Length: 287
Image (cartoon, rainbow, N blue to C red; front, side, top):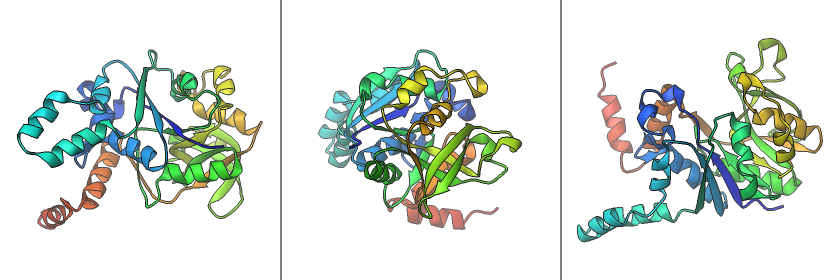
């Protein structure tokens, strides 16, 4: 079992980032000098992924333009002698083999992932949600791939979240294999307090076998009237083994203003070009 393909669902309305997301795809809103989706694609590439499918929707052609060549811009940069910028812009277009497909109706994450079937076929594949920016020494997706390939099964990335927040996520019933790796026994999407299975929640990263499609194709609308990936995962884990890895690293939910600000500050502090300036600027603030 080798994981060489990734799917990035990027078709949502971005309601938590309105009004900016009305005109700019939320995935293209800049975080420390780069659009959010740049970090997602880079994580996939750094994890050994060779082919990426980005699922978009109407009004999101800016994502396609970002990962394409820009002959006019590149020519102007070359004539101006701005070789560093020229190289950076050119490298973005060559990060990976990227394919795009539109989700014409937004019926949930599970519905979006179904659009990837012709791209992945029967092969295992990673799913990286565009809202979740990860910072880690070893890419989070790579951590999942290593365990999925070792045990030859699906593996989802989890963290413990506060009891007050678990209703915003999926909740998992798990049995420990090691202190960070678990067998998944059951999942539920956005549970009410009486149905919480544990405080372990999936946070935006998955490695799935091709068997997931048979469950997605037969899935009924779930929470919010949408086709939920979590419901298909729950059916899948009843038929075959599924792992949950409490991954190493920090996760930032860039799909809301607070998480966006956290990601912007933390990634800027990690950037040697601006970190000292930002530290000095923050020290001088009067709060």
